[in-house]
Image: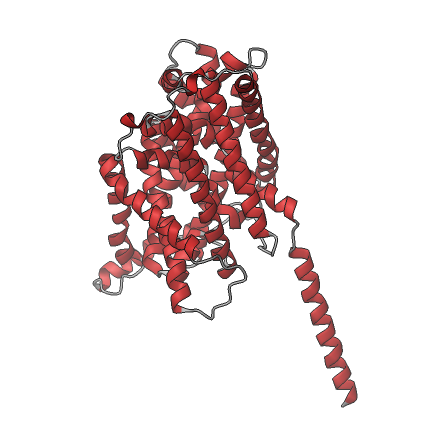
Length: 471
């Protein structure tokens, strides 16, 4: 009997030691956490969105306020997603959070729009920015052929799809290398702008706040464009695997740093370029480089294009994996849950999404794609934080390793729903199309997932199509 007791004690000690080792192995420091989060958030949006923010806000001063406001909202959203990520540790991000808090229908609709247009639109949007920054220097100051931009965009997108099909390790190495280039590109833009501002070049800031050009129906579109540049905040829990006590501080430091960088980049743009010059430019960083970086004007487009590739690679990496989790849970066709037997990549999901990416790239432009993407994306982000509030109310004793003050999710959710609803008035065509495409998933859900009310023959047909497998 004492031997048994000793064995049990030894087993308990070994178990405790293993748990401690696992816990130590999962901890990360403050600096790595800040690096991961900044690498996730900083993307191509800062090179795409400034024109949209300025044209919809009406003045430089108001556009800078919009950039600051979007930074605060994104900080609130990042903190909310940090709570969601620690409360629900299963993979799947948006799909998992909606499934656990609001139920299967909203979770399925998130998968539906991710496959139908959020994933393809986001990929096409960044691909077009990449193509424009590659081609623009060869044609400046003449107009760039649209078909050439789209051809280069398709080539860049195809290359990264092939990389993600071939090797996860290769895709991750590319991402790490290109993340460093993002920061270099931002710094190269900020430095000459700040130097010119210190030297007294402030004429573009005269009458910076022109409220007569502000219309409330366009303001949500300005915020949409700004929020696009911060859109990686909802994927923070994918970048940081274990949210320990350092993570709240890491989120605050990283999001404040990104906001300051974004505001300084726009200040640099406005210092060197007049508002009319910025609005007439389709590649703002290229135009900026021709004025401010005469010795390095050929380097900026290359750096920006590589930064766009980093964002594009991240989107191609993340989007199929959400569909993979949905298929594994039975809410999406089973073929999406299969992986390549040797490469260990979600090959079917990538190849099935690729044609939609190409079609959307050929048929859309940057402003149209941004409006189409932003409505549904932010609608489901708002739904996720609303679900977090409902889950707090229904299950107050559920363990939450990290919990944000109530005012943060309430503020973020209310503002997000206000922006989403007001955008239906501001841009009824694109947001209306986005809304209709989202709602089109409701009958699909009842035909494929919740099909118990259908006739037996229909149930057999939809069950076969839902359970189709790869060869």
